[in-house]
Image 1 (tube, rainbow, N blue to C red):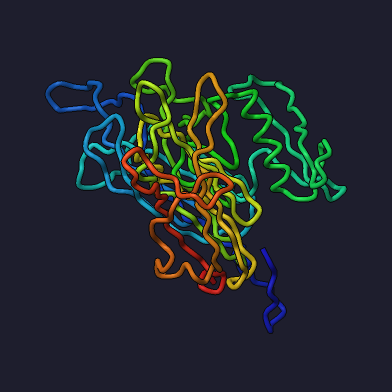
Image 2: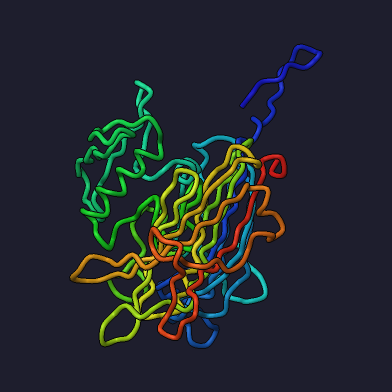
Length: 376
């Protein structure tokens, strides 16, 4: 908080200016526990929750609708609130209401999630040292108390192995390499994942609910945590963002012998970032529906997006099927002007990739640009 002196010599407090804006989407809960219902005749009994969410940041509160009795209620409710520093905590309560029409003072709290704003702003596992270099630290998935963090090693710009990096993105990539090897399919990564959004200043994942005492809340499925999926997207003041949505591919060639299909995933390379999409199995027209987010310095900056599409193999090396290349400036993306289908070419070739019917393979992309001057 900054201090402001008045003409009378007394001091008044005024809020610090916002460092940015947090856009929070409350998507869906999973495996909520039974709750206690009461009736005048039958007394108390256990039943399905009638859940709603209350989100709080900066003493501002937003509330979702109340969902009719459901173990896995869906809201897709978005709220946007200013953030004043990285230590501010986003707080979310999942509540149970005894009626659908309104909330009550005595509504039951099913569980809580608390998340510092800095956890969304910073790359996972990355911190800045006093020497000015970035480092990455990995803690195994589901590690117990007292587990020692591993210092992640990676490659610097010259290809030499190191454990300190000039940029946060290099450290984040080193973290991903270590986490993917150690945590395997349970790994939570910076540049890939199962969420609909991946990348800079965005976090989409499932968070476990905790009680008021901090203990994990188990759901109706015994021994399994109650979870809630959130998307937190941060817009830093003075920073412009570009979002590239990998919608789907079409007319891919058959790659798997016997099944006559392929297991497709993509690498998207843009602005010095390399993202990996989710894997879509057994489809020649895979739907990825995944967005990759980066910051850009200049709306006139010339960018190249290269999307490589691969076929995953369990026992052999993955097959590089083709590439789509788009050259553009961020300002070209406004109002959907760049959205559409782009031809896939065979790797390192000008020859079009085609399926068995001679149809050209395509990649459908969508672009969104958020200039900093429109976010002020």
